[in-house]
Image 1 (cartoon, rainbow, N blue to C red):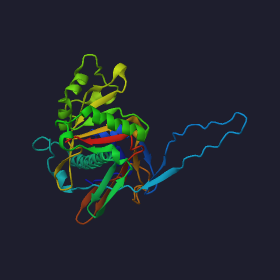
Image 2: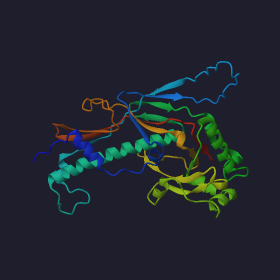
Image 3: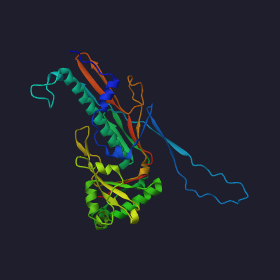
Image 4: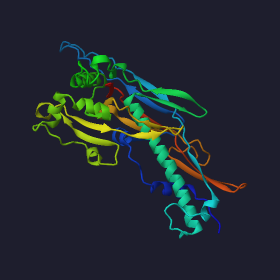
Length: 349
């Protein structure tokens, strides 16, 4: 029985029906998407003005106000293309989960093997997207490195004052610690620099433990007169099995200055097979709606793709001797915070 290669349209359909893993940073902060038909992605950054309108006599001409210029920034996304073998010998072996003795036909096993390859490739790429969104949001930059790829740091220009590393007795849990003041200071700085309020705190588990140990914090998070209801639909998904959890709201009088509080704990496996944390357990990250995170995708550099502006492109081909079929999925991603100053990071210990 011959086994046919799937065309691109069929492969795209196969990919779309695979379950998508949770992606906290990507889904919550990078809702926009732009596909570029070039290798580079480009952004215009316009700095807002705070100048007062000038006083003039009502009988003289109005004065022309000088316009601020804008800065164009270009980034070349890194490229990723996980690849797998579809081994013809697999059609003669029972698949995992199949009844002992085998109940699937050879072509059904072939289809299952192709679908499994595509699922693994897509999941790996989406984990990478989420990791890039996390790094851009937490650190204001993404460090890209890989086999045969020189290390590159893509810095999005977040102001250095929006990263605070607490030391000595200022660390949360120590004698001079003041968690609410630290957050208030960085929140004010982010508003002054980014022009948009910080509305959410995402904390590592150890950071939250030290935060909640403060009596002042407990009064706010446990107080009967303080609303614990979240405005965000994300809180509905913070259930067991997810890497994040909604913990409550910090707010001032009459609901002013609302800050939703989440904890986050997610791991990934690096190229060496070592488990790493996406976010440090002692980090606190503030974010607001003005971050304007955008999923950017450069052109797929593949003849079959025709340099299409698509976020993900699967393909499949044969090798004759030895007889083997390959699947490969390609993407050229870069997650870009449009207003990186609408975020901050505090390392509390």
